Image (cartoon, rainbow, N blue to C red; front, side, top):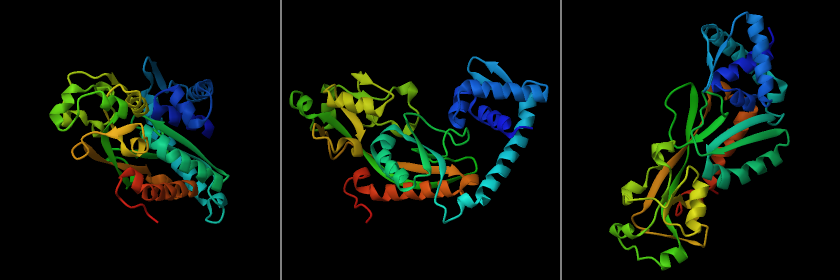
Length: 303
């Protein structure tokens, strides 16, 4: 039985969509569909039920899944034993890193670019997205999230704390009533996340300060929120590593409007022996230490 066909089956089972499986395997979705059709012909039974939301395993597919997962574990074992993964060979291959949009874009991207320059045989996919990424679905190899994973066979470490504060554009603040206490926030417009699309409760801030009657603008993207504040649309809670460096912005209620959240880093336990995973994991931990001063202003960075 062709392992490639089984590999596509495994990724489709995990992601539930042809597009998701295609991203994970680095091919076109038509290739995934063709491989699945070939496997179903070989098995003599459909493995997936095609639905509007994606692909759902049939009973035959559910019975096949554990055996294919065992084959994958065996393949990973062979990969770990390969000379290419020996300590002196240097890391090689692809590692997909998932992170929150702001942290991935502003903090991680420059560092990861330097990592690939240091290791020319190493490739990085950086998924900087305003949503939760799941190791169980193989959406990424290493995930940096705001919530600590509580289930599954994963390795988890605290990467870093980071600070968020309330900001406004300086010109906007100059022409609006002074904010000296929380009650003064009633005179101001607000920018925030779209409530029903918020991917984690760790990003709920505004109601703790002053529940606004309305929002001037809401977005799933922290980058969009940041740009809206810069344009003078209103106030928003933003990561300090994004907003503190911008001279256009000023803090509002500096002694009250401050929040601390934690980045957690996780990867599948089965992949911990791979040289490329070890290299990226250790590198990201070092980034977390070195960026401490920008993530939590006032905390000294590691030397």
